[in-house]
Length: 184
Image (cartoon, rainbow, N blue to C red; front, side, top):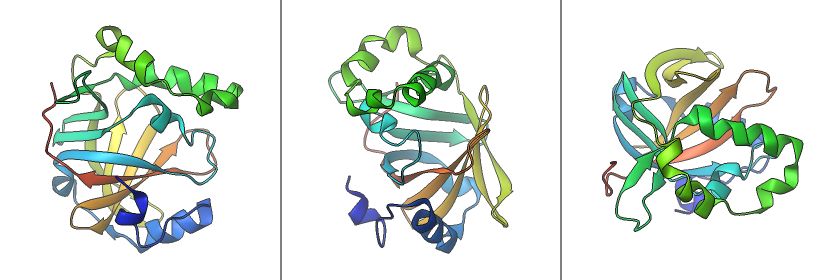
């Protein structure tokens, strides 16, 4: 999945990403139901590059109470598995302290920890919240002070702004609807 195929112009700064995001339409939580393939929008945010380095595939919204925020491909690539974000975000703190960690691939390591880090149940939920003056679908993590707020780019693409407690700027990503792989 290429960002250039999903966004009218690929932003490289927070200001540019906010302009694209703010131009997007609000979405209802029901619009988000399904499985979505994700890609980071690099804007210089401290966590830029971490999801790609981990092999993150996307998110799944089963219903308003059942959301899997971190999906990864199975070893054979035919299905997806959900990771517990509370365990995954421990690595984010380390990467912020040692930025060079973002320059390495952790795909094999993530796969190797699958039995330990696998989410045994849903780890987020969908609600409507107001962000930047607009009411839109928001994924709230159950165990972390993080909200992902979505805006519609097209019928099958949304842009997410990750609002992290303690971060001055949002972290951006794009999701494209893709129900081609089962989540197991």
